[in-house]
Length: 266
Image (tube, rainbow, N blue to C red; front, side, top):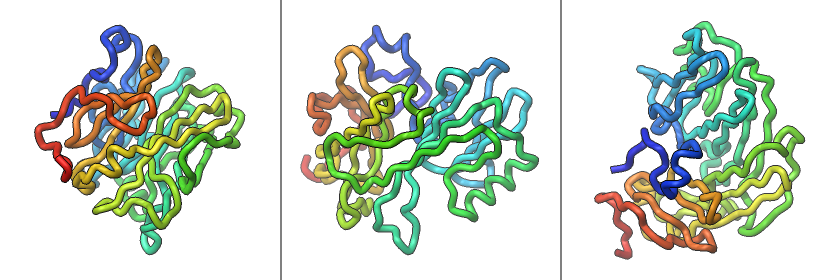
C-alpha cells in the first residue's frame, strides 16, 4: 500500500532527512501530517470538508479558514512563508476533450484573508467549478496551455517566479485530439519548470501512456528529482514507487509495487 504520511521513501537515505516530501494532489496528500504548514506564527492545518467530497480548507493558527481547494491541487510551502499552488484547469464540459492549462498561484501566507463561512466557500467553489478559492494573499498568477510538444521550450513567467526552485508538474501534453480520455488513452507528461532560466521541458511518460493500465483506476500522483543524481522518482495510486531512466520517459526500476498494480501487457 502507498504511504502518504511519511517522507518520500524513493529518495536515498542521505536525502530523506534533508528535503521535505514533494507535494501530492489534494485531498489525499493534504491529510498527511507532512502537509501541515509551519510558519513564523505557528502551524496552519488542512481539514477535509465533512460534507463536500474532495474539498479541503486551510486553517490558520487562529483557527480561521483562509483557503479552499478541490480535487487535484498541489500545494508547496516556499521560503518566506509563501505558498505555490498548481493544478490543471479547463477540462470542463462541453469541451472535456480539450487539453487543460497548468495554473500557478504564488501566495503570501500571512496576507490570506479569513472567510466567515468555510462550508459556504466550499459550496461556492463547487458550484462555480473552481479548483481553488481564497481572498487576499497578494496573488501572482501564471498559466500555461498544455498543448505543447515534447522537448525544451522558452516560457515567459512573472519576474517573481524567477527565484522559485525547479518545479515538476504532472499534466497532459500535445494536441487536444490526443488528450487523455482516462479510459483507453493517456497523454501524461512531466512538465519541468526551470523558472530561473525561463525554460520548460516536457517529458512524456511513455511507460504509463502506452502501458495499458486501468486509467480510471491507476494514475501517477507525484514526482521529484534527486538533487544528487538528477534522476526523477515518483509514485502513483495502485502503481507503486519507481525511478525513471536517464530519458525520464521510462521506468528504470520499481522500488515498490502495489499488489493491485497490473498493466494489460503484463
